[in-house]
Every structure is written in C-alpha cells, then in structure tokens.
Image (tube, rainbow, N blue to C red; front, side, top):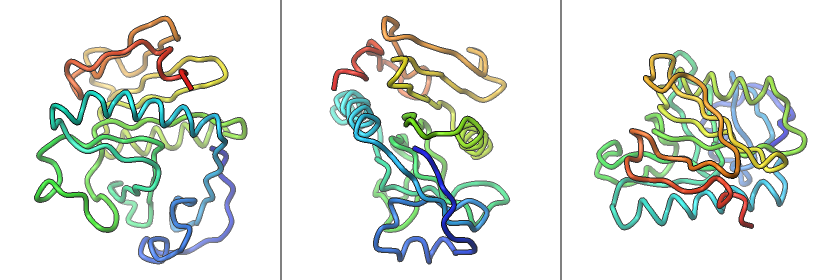
Length: 189
C-alpha cells in the first residue's frame, strides 16, 4: 500500500465523515491515501479467511479489514491507522460489539500486506505506531517473496522480530493460542 499525502490538518471525525474514508489514514492530522493492488487485496482476504476459520467457531474475538480505523495511539489523537487485517480478542470491546466509528483500543494482531509502491520507512512507521499502541503481534506479508516478517514488543520471550517463508508454519503465539497454518496458505489466491 503506497501512501501519498494528499491533504493536511483533518480531524479524525472529518476523516470518518469522508465518503471514501477507508481509502485514507490520518497521520499527525495529515490525510494519507492508501493505495493497494489486487494482489495485496487477495492476500489480505486469504489471511482473513484463515483467521476467520479459527476465530469464529471459538468466538475468540473480532476480525476487521481495512475499513476499520484504529484511534489508539498514545500522544497522537490525530492519528488513525487502517491495517489490512486486524484482530481484537474477546473481552476487549464494550458489550462485545464493534463501535460505529473508530476502535479506540489497540488490536491484538495486525497484518499488513506489502504492495509494489510501499516505502520501507512508511511500513516501519506503521510498525512503530502499532507497537507503541500495545499491539502484541504484527505480520508484514510480502506477496512477491512469499514471506512474512513478524514483529512483537521488545520484551517478548520470542524476541522482537522473526521471519517465516512459505514452507514454514505460522502460529498465533499467545495472541491466538492454537492457531497455525502454513505460510503458503496466505498466498493461495
């Protein structure tokens, strides 16, 4: 997802009111366009499908796609991020219902799929934002190399960074205990 700055100084509510709000994030009050491609979109759906097959029968929590905006970043009230796929454990949303607007608590798992125009510093910025908000597991999926990078908090017993190739198994670690699938299934599109 290549992001191009198109306008500045919007409030989160103004972003929410845009007819095409899902196409944008808000970073420091700046409207940032999210560009995705069909390949990255198909991979996001494949990952969401794998997660849904595990989460739904167990009622383990809530899955969201890029339409869901998160406003949960410490010291950054004008920041809204929209991960390609995200998961919030059961018990973390009021009345176990997604809010009408933004989710104001951090997701437990975030997944971003790289698109050809993504810039490394933009992805690194997102990872830093997610970790500072308390996200416990981040998957950055690369369709071109059929790999993923795993990011965790610095104090994780598994270490802050990991990697997996398409022949490896990926697990939900302590965020989604019991979830596992071969990374190659993320690319079965």
